[in-house]
Image (cartoon, rainbow, N blue to C red):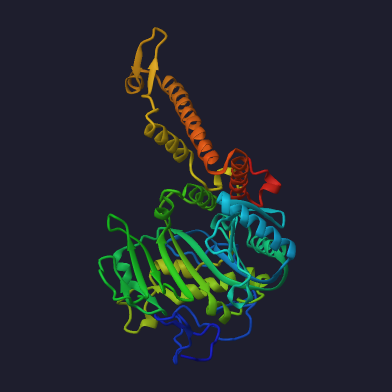
Length: 484
């Protein structure tokens, strides 16, 4: 379906294909008229809404008109930023890539330096495509890629949570210019998200959703949707508690409402949870459950908003406009409050979403080494002990008294003091993990030598160490040392 495309007009995303199309009839949102001008909208005139020039803008990330007895905003930020670059890869960079790809073929990964940044180059089954990553970003290099966009850079959510949006833009450009001469920039995807307390989700909320993507729902108990891609998806946990709703999955505009606290409680999210909670505490978080609403924009939708090509300099001033568009694109309403959909009263939770003035907020903390990902200390020690137990080399935890009496750990813990128990715990963890590490290290070295020979094995191991260091590196290391 083809149609003229108008900024601020009501648009729908077809369930099949997800393309933006302008409907024949424009419905005004009950909260106020939408701006329908096609020119680029600047800071005082943003997507989907026009502010009076004399009206002062609220401070970053606050509610314009906080909802009484409604959800409380505790932060908002860009949660995904992906940019493609049309550029000419320099001959020196191409040669360096080829060399390190060969190293990765043997070692599994290699260190790659670009623009003064260390990245891990991962071994790939496709020789024409190179994947790079560190603690801040991931990148894909494909000189044979369709459309002449050989480099795609995606910033990690943890980086975005700890840096201003201007720094994020500077970083993706720094990476691109390190590869060669840049001709064009293309915003591939951006997600804007806000976090709230007092925003509980329930299974009945599926009946409250109104969206330009449609209203067909995928419920947890549905066994077969015949391959169709429903506009709404409802997610729940093992206790059948609703944890999220996705609207317009697979389209150029997509929305998610989900239990952020539950997501961060999942294993492996410790570093991200620490940073998110630091942000929330700085904004008055009371420790209660947090719900996130986020809007995702990509492809044709960004082109509609004139935010796709060579637009990064304008992006910071356009974030609130994207947020307001997403808050209009999907709504939670009171289902029986009117007979016509456009006149339905907003649910108080969605009134809080609409009230947000969106400005990217970064956490007021530095990126320390404990926020770099990788396995946790619990996983590292647990893995070593499991390996030692499998080899039959893991002893029981016991305490030997000065008189030579052997006391089992459980008995010692029941009869000793906290200080004595702590001392013994630290001692036995260090001894058992240390012994397990020595055994595992010797076995690993033997395997490398058998596979490569001693001299080559030493080179391979050194390359693996460099690659691991690169994966954990960050642009912050240049200023903070990354050791805190």
